[in-house]
Length: 442
Image: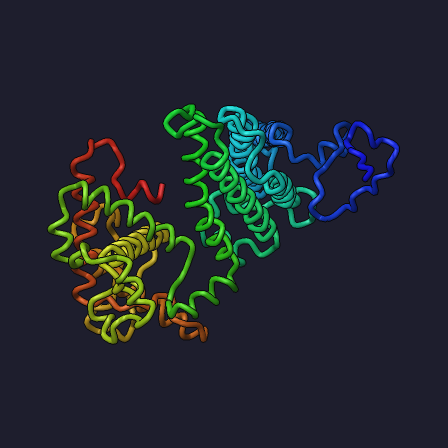
């Protein structure tokens, strides 16, 4: 039997049918523009991240220059107020999300695989997806400069109510939110890629304890991003009034704003700082309850069964009945709402004196600084007449109550604990330093 051995070196004359291209083809262009547009090489992607970051760094620097020129002399008319707000918003957004973060991704992409001995990242195509998704988000964020509506002007921090349709009636904020959503997707995808690469693609002998410090920094930063960005990215959609109202109704909440979310989360932070680390744990538990109960079970029970039927007798909101931690955060946020609103009432010179109130129980005028109120009773005595008046005005317009809450005695006692906690911290501070409350409102 005649047998013929064939190999790559002896079969040059045989025709080999080329493989058909598919959606999974690996880019083969090594030169020219197409090689950069289709690359999945981690070094090239890192280089492109760096180029884009430096480009947007220059854009952000130009925006900062215009801001400084406007502020160079008093009463300058180089920019209008609207243009200044646009530059302020876009400068912060550009420097943080379009310059600093992609520059970090550039170093992570280029250096980290080389340090651990990997030929590339774990998912090269996902890496390319992250790059171009970032660029798409960056372009969408900056599209406002070339549109009639202009760039967003609500501040790069996106606080309510400036992002609402009342103060931002055009679609500039919508474009801004859409771009940030894409940036969040890009960051999450890249972070997952880096984590898998570091854990699974180290060279033989490269144990975790032998990793360079830079690689450890990449790993920790990636974990921080995938833990934080989903919440930030999802919360951004609530800048849309319709979406926020839909969620408010679905969760049975009488009141829901982005500013309320912010103050609620701040409350969790200050529970750690002022209660747990401030030696007030026993006092707090006496007012809000035992926080040592299982938090996960408490949340599950709340979402399955809802709040108790008589929750208004002891809590400021339904969600506050979930767990003492949430009760503290909700009460903290409510206290900030009340003080901030009373400060605005005082600054506006508003007073309430109903004609039907013969006894004067519902008359009020804020003739004191709400930040330095001597007691919670002084705050509540001024607060209630104003909210009664505001609710009556809302009802006269056919709208729901502006202040849909009931302040029962236990709730007022909890607000009093927050008041004493905040002012106790302020009294320990140096006299020339602003109080803790003022740090929230400027």
